[in-house]
Image (cartoon, rainbow, N blue to C red):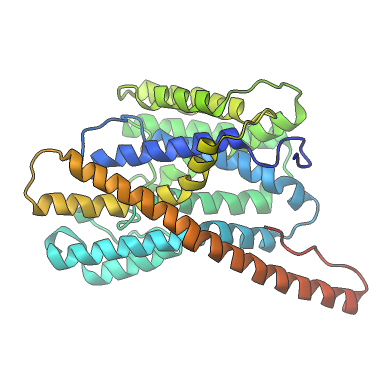
Length: 372
């Protein structure tokens, strides 16, 4: 089935690519949590790919609807339904980790008031700037990866309110300016792993702006161009592995951000989409996996320290990854999907009542109810 843009309703190749990127992030964070050596030196570049894919998918799902009359607050509701159930769960899991660490090793974590305030902000996908060098100035101390969701919410709102109807030339100019600022920040800090802490937080704005608007532009080009070129999900995942597994190098960061990752997203977003069970599974699991994995790795790291293990433990790694995968799937099926379905029905009902009232009061039909 195709939507108004002529592209398939669901971009299956990008599902597989997003899922593979989430897996690489988890593997990258094994080293961050001191559970293994660094297997994926450029794992943080998966976040840049997430931003690009988000631009493609959001433009694909909402451009026509917003231009055709979908209200801004309906868009906000749709994004809240999609992001917040699991995001709040991830923040709650991060709070549990911080409280546990506070009880066991209070000298290695922030004060209790700071923990509570930071976690409250993080549950709303807002950064905390109350952390210190004790927790490396992390903006989301209990669950670091939530920082990217915070920036995604910001760029989603800016795009829907100001840029969805903007001319392509305007979007190109903003993308170029943000790209230049991002490149300057990458060269200044020596790598592209920026935006997750207070020290590099401002660099997150050009990072997400460049990535998201690059995705929007890819979507616009795809829907206005007859080029049918595309790659399968498996090929995309293999190419992504080649990008992320390269030895750490600043030039490779820049080449990947500005050339390779956009090309990967472009060739994965064409009209030719092949649905596979593995790709669908990875795509479905990608968001809960990304949101929930880091606190689990931190708990595993704490267990490792308690056991006084100096080296790396493959057994603990396997256990941590298994728990992460199972918990992510259970949270997706038993919590996230039911909650999103219930919230959608509730808001559809409210929108339907408002529509009927508009017909009675004004004689005209208001905006159609929000669709999932």
